[in-house]
Amino acid sequence: MSEDKDNGARSYKGAVLGDNFILHINVKFLLNALVIFGSLLYGFWALQDRITQLENSSQTANEKIAELVSRHVEEEEKKIQEMQEKLSFFEKMAETEVNINPLSWRKKKGNK
Image (cartoon, rainbow, N blue to C red; front, side, top):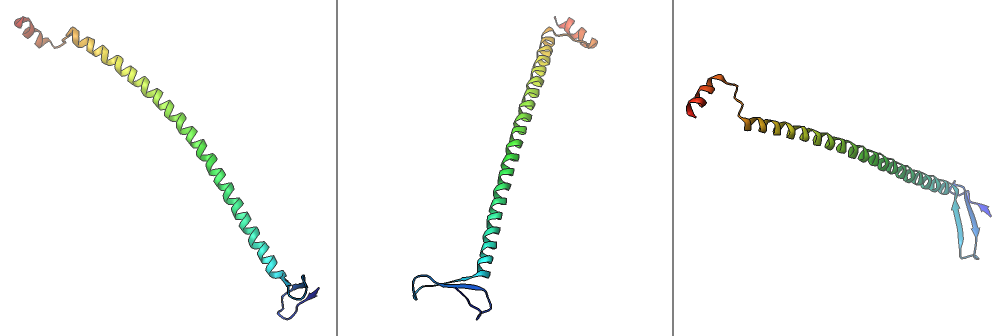
C-alpha cells in the first residue's frame, strides 16, 4: 500500500496478482463518480415521482369529467322530456284549431 504523489491526486496503488496486474484507484475520481451516480439516481427518482403525481391527477380529472358529463346528460334528458311535453301540448292545440283571431272567424264561417 503506497500513495502516489507524482500527479498530485490521492490514489491507492496495490498489487493484486503479482507484478503484472496493478490496481490504481484515484480517490477524487471515485468521489466524482459517486456524486454523478447519486445525482443520476436522484434525478430518476424525482422523475418517477413526478410521473406518478401526474398519473394520479390525470385519473382524478378523468373521474371529475365523467361525473360532470353524466350530470350534463341527465339535465339534457330532463330538458328534452320537458320540450316533448310542450310539443305534444301544442300539437293538441293545433288539432283543436283554436283560432283567436276574430277577423278569420268570418272567413271560416263563410267557407263552410
